[in-house]
Length: 334
Image 1 (cartoon, rainbow, N blue to C red):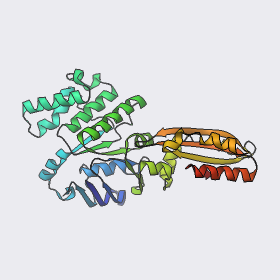
Image 2: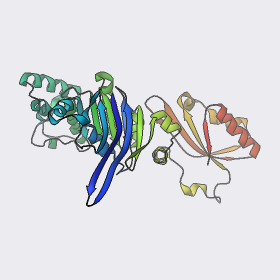
Image 3: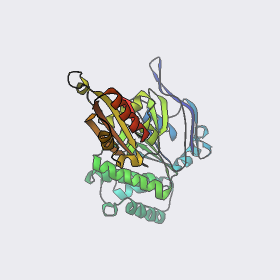
Image 4: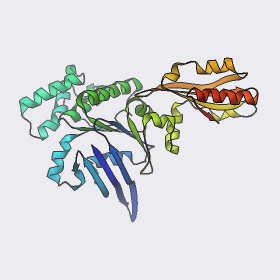
């Protein structure tokens, strides 16, 4: 669906070259929700703006549904952009226009007839749950409602791809969940491919099928979300995952306070629901002190993490860890 080949973007800053993205290559499948995550300044927003040529790439190719959009002239590009909807962090609504008028705008710009516009906008208002806000101005809407207007506007021309540039980072957690649920519904019911830029690992966890990790303008890792949580390969990925794992604080592992072995345990799928640790404690002559833990629901599975202190005879601890490994628990001695 989307092929990005050796893409780079350079800005001139005085006499110096600033490479915002460097030699980025990836493939995104049709119907996939693909996340691109990284810290501020990693190049995420520049990358997504290159996908519809709001930013002009310096080098490389972007092929969308068989069309190389980097080779298109302006008129051809305007036609191609009908297939690419985009939503933004701060909504980008026209404050002097009503909800109806904001959604209708892209249809008016493409010369769509009034009756067709009215039918399409009314359908979209119903789809995003804003039928009662038809004649309301953006200043009268909540943040979540504004983003629903922006999503409806992005869907107006029946695009094949939806680009999301930090679309939930300005929203509270409950509103974020409702917007993510809407985006999943759009993918499932309308068959869109969604590419999401975010710095929130919670968003990746809740909605994405695969994710790319960006660091200093480069892709340092591409993985399924499940594999990312199981075995993050890059330093940036590990930092994001640890932020969700309630990782133990440094003061917990001072020798004066903790005398045992500190172990991180990771559980996946159905094993999360089984009392494996309880059975281990009953089976071996060890004590277990739970320092931290949580359970995260990914798109297709559950992921649980515990950090524990084990005390007891060395051979018993080794046997207990072998027992956990035999029961599909990932074990990391810290």
